[in-house]
Length: 446
Picture (cartoon, helix red, strand yellow):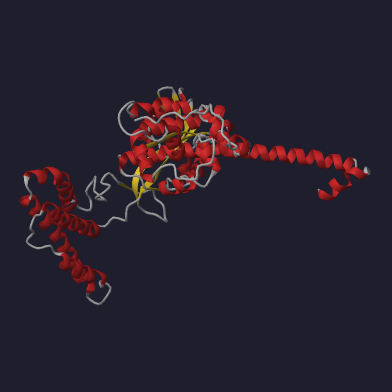
């Protein structure tokens, strides 16, 4: 059910945030720059108008999602810091300071699921609008990266042990009596695996690994035989996943690397410090002159870079309302030179290249630090959100957070330049009037 609107016509006996806070603060200015009514209209369809418990205000929940990315916080931390920070509370639509927490961290998770990828894209679209003319460049830079998932480094042995543990758990829940639980057997085999560096231990460790795989397959088949029809309906998808993991070989395609995140793919980007990355591929589009992120799209499949560009350009049209004129990419984008009316430029040996074109190819490298900031400052280095929809939401929210932060930095730098200009004027006045006794104190101060 939608939250009831607060009555703001009544005057408060206490001073409000309008009177207390610094109006030049970046978060204060951002709160007044965002069109919050846009989110109210778009997200109200996800709530019932009459039934259910009144929900938290939509502006509050959207502001928590934005602040989470802006400050690189977890769901728990952003809720806690909201109760301690006056600017966070003003950003979410409060008039006076509130001492309690706005909601539980679980409500932030549920709201993110409620709005989905469509809602995250709307927040990204608003972040581009806040940047004004800077987000309307016709020349873009494109690149792809990997958003790693929060999973352990996958090995066959880890997966088999997890299958054994999950099968034992299923048997307990469904009250299925197994011939043997293999609990102590797996423990003994794990000890043998740990001692593989001892003399002759490598041979015993390989035999132990084979035995663990045999036990995993044995438990899966036994559960498949003994589960009732209702149990098979409940656990059938899990058992089929276990069978796929048990049967997969080293050279197979579409391998499973995680039981709780089976959509995760393996990527080899040729990095010396990190040979393999496990997650999803992300395409980023950035305006060349201003550095505003105008495209951030996640892909669940392991596509070639050139195959991602058409979908990324379609998202750019949805976000900005117009087609890009030129896109500059690296040599990992071989393929069509034109998509609709957008020209695709890839560097190659050319003696007749113009200075302008050469400079634009050089400028394309500026997207690399943008990706680095997205990963390490805006929560894209390791994605903690569940499922493929969590990958897509995290990418777009990270891009939106960086766009909002860009405007905040511009406002802050403009304020600093103004302060320096005023300081220079006062100092110049004092120097030219140094003989006046009234200015002696000012000269000493400066």
